[in-house]
Length: 511
Ligand SMILES: [Cu+2]
Image 1: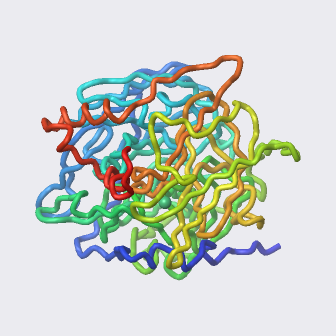
Image 2: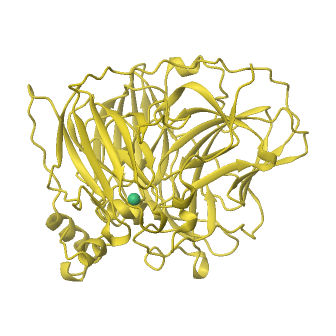
Image 3: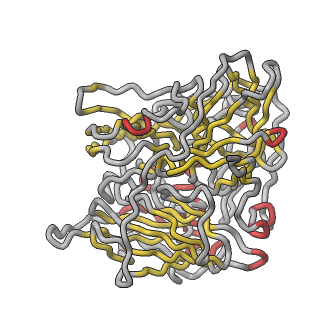
């Protein structure tokens, strides 16, 4: 039986970011090629059979990205991005979240099923400069490529732009039994895809580049490397790809249209492997793919592109023959039953630029927009009404759960949308139906993951509640936030300006 290979990007071509008025085309870096940085694995402070202790420190530093002056960057346990954190399923994590930055931040675990809103680390869990917050949680979800990023509303976009994004890998026994490459840094390689603009003296300038529809730069940056290459020493490699950009979509393909196999999406391994030559990721989505270099002659280079711009050059060396084939079925995904009584929740993403909203409203930290009982399954119909000038794809993300994609405008989801996801790109004029349930109580945000859109108010929040154990939450408020940030910066509150605020002001609204 010949497997069919998917050769298109599926999303609506007229809505690709290349058609945006403010689109910044990627440019091939003219600087020398450098070895791809592999984020080191974060060493636990302490480890027992059942518990792991980590310290994650947000810090400022400098990174040699281009020849000449170093770039001022932020990172976790390093100057840029993060060290990769491993969460073995079933173990309890104890994490000190230390803020050594000059600004308030939060530590959000994107894709992790943990209680909200404090462990989840959204805007209600601030860590002030010089302070440490402690969280504990049990890892209780399948193996997956998740990520950690800052999420202090409305400065999420700027803090991620400065470098606050790292990977977190859930591991479990089921994934460990599958014939996937998993030698980290050798044949199991993370690829964090981002883009930046370098200004004078090789510095980034978020405010100079600000665009309410999402900040972009022309230079691809992969794992914090400009113009990287990777030495391939095994026939098969696994790439854990994260769209870690603020706004950019990545339309990925290899030279000579080398096919590859996607085995996992946001929330873990998919029920079946899916073959592609082309793959589009929207902001915050992840794809784990296995690339087989068996037909490539050692000494040759295979290039990963987005559109027509090279991102990573894979220099293929001699390798031992690998005859591993993937099973046709990888894992079972639970699929709770729905009945005619299953509630259908409608969520509408609308607008572009400063006008972005959810359900006709902009985000307010103190307002809970919806409630859903823990354990109850609901269908969420998420609509993107934005079809101005061809519109744009809004990547819809939910905190606190992994959902299933049921349909796109009543039709089957894309071939790689049959596993757990936490982020789904919604085309203009499209309604994507999701199957959603929460396993933990808490207040959780849901939003567009074009990060400037969430800062600009395309965000709402839901309380997942247990009627037998009602809870109250201390939610962050704008006065506390503004006072804290103004104090950090040594300025008066009235002189404080945070990027996302302009979207509210232009609409005559207060945050
Ligand atoms: Cu959006």
